[in-house]
Image (cartoon, rainbow, N blue to C red; front, side, top):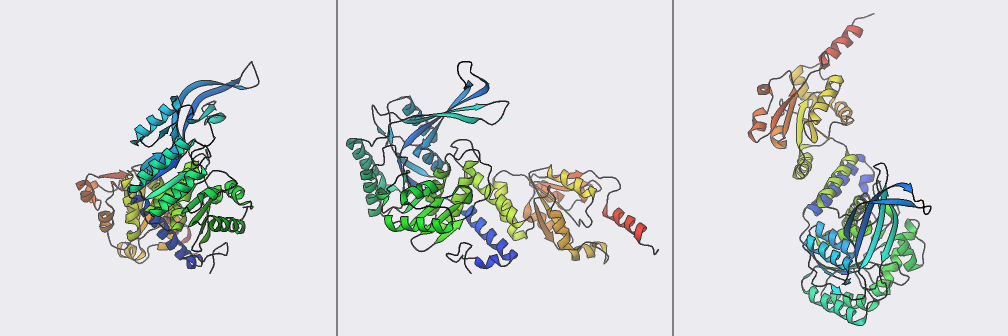
Length: 524
């Protein structure tokens, strides 16, 4: 069976036929991506490109100038961040990369700010090449807000010189790179067409890397000729860049394929990844992969920096042993997280893991077996989440249950509910119960917002579940005393606590059944 774009067969294409297999595939993929992020090695990466300073001036804008029909911005605060290749450095460092960076920097205030940002991250400035008379590339953005709304960019001022660096500077860049390549696992070229990555520099750096079997990851400038990137490992580019570089239109899967195949052939690449905004990424590789990987919907705050974080992720994931498909799927997630942030803000491992787990839960629902539940809970706990557990039959859902779950959720961050199986209820309450069967009870509970996870158990008590989960809080109704709650002593032994939920008068399953029998149980 072929993929949706009728190209390379999917490894797990059988999952399309049955929803339970799709859940299995989604779980396997989500778990694999999470494991990749959790186990990213401290990779050594050489980064060469156009270093920039992003300068943000924030202010309030509530009136129009009396001098001209323009808004007046009243200064509030100012920030300096690394931009261009500098943001790639910040992104690599945020995910545990050990980065050696080469670029040019001016003898000016922005150059001082750039070096200061390097120092704050613990990054070396030893390989930066100072160019007196050539300004540090700076993008000054004015952002205004009114009535406590999200700041909006009003204007951008670029301070730069974009001509190619002189021969002496180019030679120093190549010399520094050759020295650094003795101890790196990847080379990243971040090209904004600001004069650092000239044709001669690119070709020499790729030649040096290939001689040492170092993979080369390229984020190209928007040029009409990509010949200087020939021989790189990966080219990561967006749709407009792909169209300009090839002269071909890229508006659907078939056209993405044509564009990618031309780039693969013309530049002798191993892989091409075309970023497509909310559509995701298109992946093509020299060994035959052709696939459109879709992305989940996002609330876009600012697309700035998303492509840089995609390059960062592709590079680190491949070093960690990911396939091209896995690396691209992960990059899709990270690029999506970046567009939700205002300005260039590096994405952390914790954010990626949380997003992957949230997406996985949206796709697979809340019900889990114990074996599938425990690894997810371990990741939540590692990110600082407080786990709450309760259990019960939950036969006929009523207001008392709703209030009970709301109380339980308020005791922590995640609520895990153990649900008695039909057999265990029959042992506890007799053959006439449950009224609602196990599958239906769990399906109803899945729709309750307060509940994060559901797990069925067949034993007479939930002690085995409690032992496995080790919740921070154990919740039971106030009709119990603490010492009557199964597992209370275990939970308190490791520092957890028991919370007793207040009861709602007259709301219980037994009362509901009594009213039904009273109303309908006697023959007319």
